[in-house]
Image 1 (tube, protein in one colour):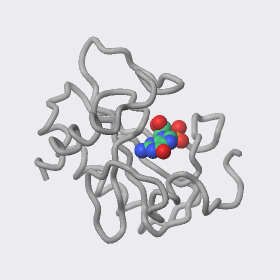
Image 2 (tube, rainbow, N blue to C red; image 1 turned 180 degrees about the vertical axis):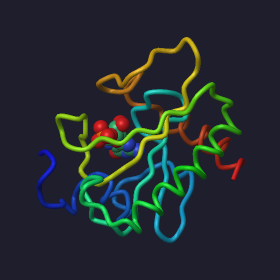
Image 3 (cartoon, helix red, strand yellow; image 1 turned 30 degrees about the horizontal axis):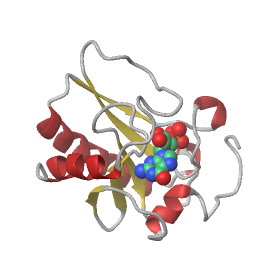
Image 4 (cartoon, rainbow, N blue to C red; image 1 turned 90 degrees about the vertical axis):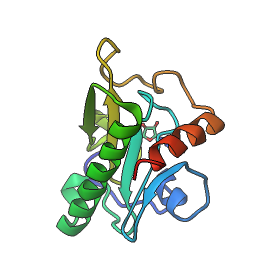
Length: 146
Ligand code: 5GP
């Protein structure tokens, strides 16, 4: 998998959109969905995806879908800031496996960052797979800020 390829309707984020696997929703509108990352790099690590675009990466994406995803990214980042008071917020997006992309449905990462904490991306998140109940409790804190 790299920059070129065919969109796979069974990729993990497509399955989340189809309701076939669960996710912890932070925000949803007609065109976009934001949910917590299951292997968070930081507390509050969130993802934003388009509901309708079948873009695998930024280079494939319709300008309209990109604008929708970025508008939601700003909304969610603002709510995360209010809920968690980070020192910084990293917005990241990877294109192609050599750049770190593992799921080929375009997604934007929102990573609250705190001074003194490790930077960068660990292979399986900072602490592996998160406890679903802990993610839901965190999502409630963030959702309360919209
Ligand atoms: P990428 O490396 O492709 O930019 O990021 C994919 C992200 O999706 C990773 O941060 C990974 O932890 C996350 N992820 C993988 N599987 C799942 C899943 O089933 N649910 C959620 N919420 N996140 C996932």
